[in-house]
Amino acid sequence: MERNLMLAGGGVLAALVVGWVVLGQVADGKAEAAIVQALDEHGMRDQVSWKAVSASPFGGSVRLDEVVLAGALGNADVRIARVDIDDFVDEPRRKRAEVQMHGVTTGDGFSPLGEVEFVRASGRAQLPPARLTMQWHMDLDDDAMAVAVEIEQPEVMTARLDLALERVGALARLAEGGTTPSAFALQDRPRGRRGGPMPGAMGMGMVFGLLESIGEVRLKHLEAALRDDGYVKRSIALHKRYAIAVSPADGKAAAQRDARFKADIEGAQRDCEKDLPVADVGERKKACATLIEFISGEEAHIRLTLNPQRPVAFSEVFEQAMKAPARLAPLLRPEIGS
Image (cartoon, rainbow, N blue to C red; front, side, top):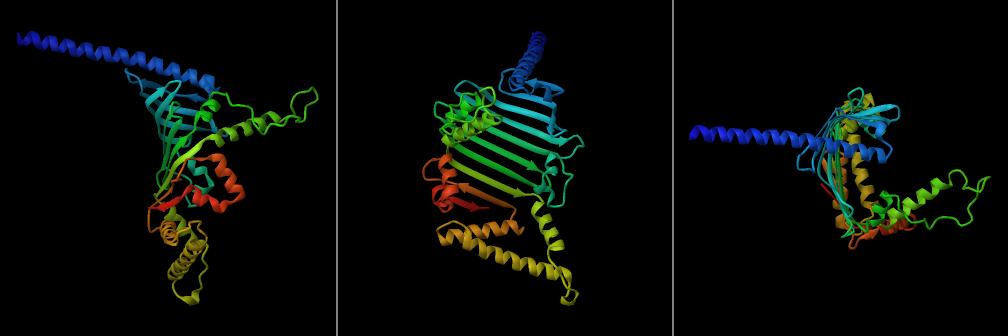
């Protein structure tokens, strides 16, 4: 009896394993077909390739290995060791996913961020592979969307942005190519020789339509955070070495550079407390102290938060930025912390 039970149990286990493998193969095929279809729809099939695809038999999770984005950086390719897509939902009224890209490099094995001038300014161009994480959750019934993006670049810094948005129906229409005609469109715009729009007019119309769609969206909350992983300290060392002059008659060069840098930091804090657009004096001093601690290398973290009293349309933000920048702080209520 025990032997028969063991054999039966082993048979059930074997059946489960075989079933899982078969389901996995079916899921892999469906996932790959869906990815190919999406790339075809966006005209990107020839630019994206991968070595293997694996998917959860129960859906919602896909992994791609050794992904290549051809010509993503001009003539250079971008290579991604692994792409994980989790919690994937793509319904007409609800869209959600988390995408993680591990080991992002160029063909030479270094991070593509090493080509960015801001990153190179700290004295490093050949950097370890980067990691990118994107999360989004759009619910058109609630007309709301949450977005999070994090870029982790070892030996430089990690940056994260979190957004909570409202009135996002315009973005959904934009993604589907269904934007309404732009109010900026000119009724009597110049025509070409054969009656069509002048070259570039169609492109300008698309730009205005994009701006209008974004302008309808409302910002509910924003948080941007940085964590230093060597960038600030290397930048400070380069600044002291090349931007601060020393005199042999005034003692040790290192001591002169340290004293001058300290004086520069103190001056920067005074300027910040004078110019930072925060009405409350105490909050302004606190925010400036946090900012100076980060750029001087004393603190590795800094965070900017926008907490408007009411959701603010991006069109209103753009308008105030152009006409009355001083009104942005009371409108968006920024906070700086570590």
